[in-house]
Each structure stands twice: as structure tokens, then as C-alpha cells.
Image (cartoon, rainbow, N blue to C red; front, top):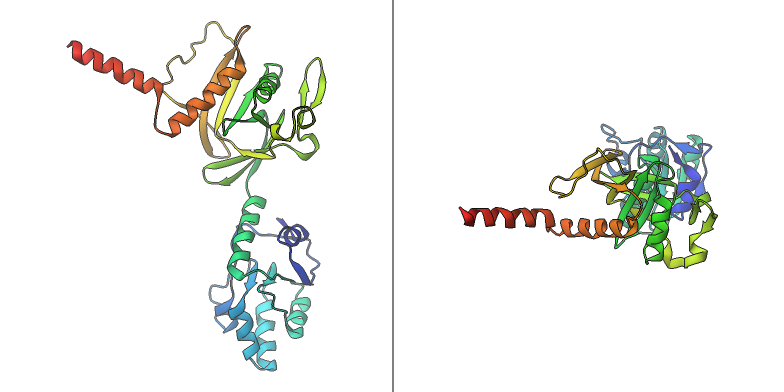
Length: 305
């Protein structure tokens, strides 16, 4: 569902005619320019999408006689349309607004070119309609990579993030991360507004990272590139020591690289997470240290034979 007031405010729209509908049942970030419908072809009318009137549509309506325009608009607005936006600074005629009010359809206006408005509106709807979830985790920007740190309560997620911030990296969210899927393979994480920039450190309490370390120490949101899971060291568990086989985790149907890092006294987790972020960046560029070592060993054995 899309809130009508949020839609108009976010896109800086002027309201020509309001509607009693506070929300619209819009399921996809798509718009319709009703050129064919205005000339009478309603065979595949996408009436469930927001409608956009540009120069062509408004010029065509002006070319009609009063009776023809009234008939055309009455048929158009008889469909359950979410809203209509008139672009390029055009002002709808009185019969246009009368027909919209009669059918309780909101009419907005903008001075932006039609294509530019549609692009901005699609970006807004993509964000508003994105699937969302909330995770108990910490999100940090480390060397440009979004690192999602997970683990049981008390394992050291916040302490690791605090050390990373002290080392010049940026905090996005502590303890609670709101995640939305903005495309088929891209996740964006951010902190809930009420706890944004705050961090809980056991023994100290709540601290404000932005006030303590400056505005450059925090980010509003960040794409999630890699997941790091912290767990207490288990003596009988075998941990990956080579990194030849990549592991992945799935969040909102998006696969992201996943690392499990054991926690024990003496291990500097912040440096390990920094190295994990750098290693991820190298892999994106096509270089894998584990595969390079494997290749060298294979070459050595082949020469020995």
C-alpha cells in the first residue's frame, strides 16, 4: 500500500484535487500514460497504475470540443484509478477536475518534464514497495563494503563495531537493522529512526556515535555486501582455514557471501573484519588468495612429476 500524502510530499507535487483515499493498493513501480485510452482503446488499460498526463495527452484533450472532452474524461475516470499526475506545469481544465472529483480520484501537478517525473516516481515506488525485514545485527561500512555483523547477544558485535568506528570506518546501525530489497540482488540496510547513531556498550550504557566521533563516523544507509557471523569458539568444530569454498546466506531471497568467525580471548575481531572486507573487495576484482595458493601448489606438484 502507498500512502497518498507521502507520495505527493516525496515527489513535491501540487494537489489540484484531493481524494478521500489515504492509501492506494499499488503493487508495482509502474506508471501508465493513457494516450490510447483517451482515443477510446481500453482493451489493455492498466488502470491500477498511477496515470501520467504529459504534453501529448493534455494537447489532445485541448483539441476536443467541450462535449467530446467531457465524454472522454468521464469514461477515463470511471475506472478505479489510484491517481493522476499532470506534468510540465499544465493546469487541468475544470471539467477534468470535476470528473476526477466525481469519481474520487486525486489529481496532482508538477512542473517537471514527464520522463523525469516518471523516473523519480519509479525510484520512490521501488523504495516504498521493497520487501523488508528486521534483523538483530550490526551494520558497518568497512573500506566501502557493507558488513552485516550477526551473532548471539553478548558475543561482541557492538564492541567490534565500536573499534571499527575508532579505526575510521562508519556505523550504519547497531543492534537493530532494517533491511529492504531494492532489486533482485541488492539489499539496503539502515537503522530505525528512534535508535539511529546510538550504540549500547555493556558496562557503559548508551552512547551517541555521531556526537562522540563526528558526522563522518555514521551513515544513514548502506548496501549489504557481506555477512560476518560471530560465534564463541567451539573446540570440536572445524573452521574454514583456506577459503576455497565460499559460503552464502540468503536474506529476502538475495544471496550474499557469509563468513563464520570464532571468538576467543586474544583475537582482534575488528582487524579480522577489516581483512574480510578487503578480501571481499579483492574477490570482486577477480583475485582470490586461496585460489592463487592452490594454483601455485598444483604447479609445483606438476613440475615435480
